[in-house]
Image 1 (tube, rainbow, N blue to C red):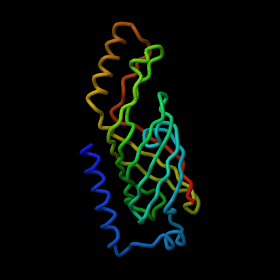
Image 2: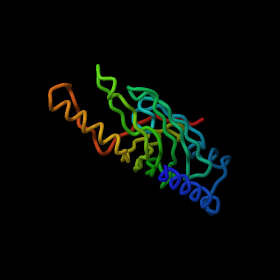
Image 3: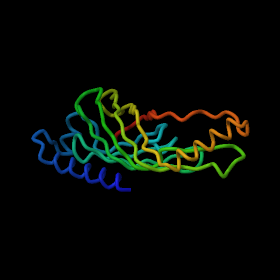
Image 4: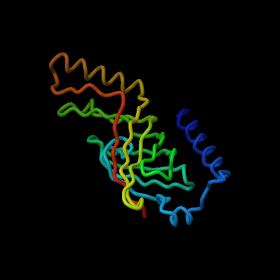
Length: 187
């Protein structure tokens, strides 16, 4: 929780700092000069979309945005809230940095409901927006590093032990870096 408040404070400072940017443009200017809209909706896969779900992003300034996502993570509803910093907002391929708090891990085992859980915590990472014709739509790709709880590590160790004992099948070792992909439309 402390990490979340530090992240929230950092996002607030970045937004406040962007207000003094000499290159700052109002929402009206952004819409009129073929830049991405201050509001967009995306559907996608990955933790930044709540699993399989949707995400609404709002960019009050050119480079800084906030988002909320809700989706289905194969166990239950997953959600995330976070911030995005666009590095080169005027380019067709725009690198981004993002951080968020919410769902960042899930364990689902058929027939063993006591192990089925969703885990929450912060996640951070780089990504890119690949913009299409006149910036109305873009593909969003992110590599995210989840900061997982000790409870998640303990439960994964328990599941790994069950797999080694032959009590469950088809265990896939969790990856330390996760991919999220989504398709966004400005409105």
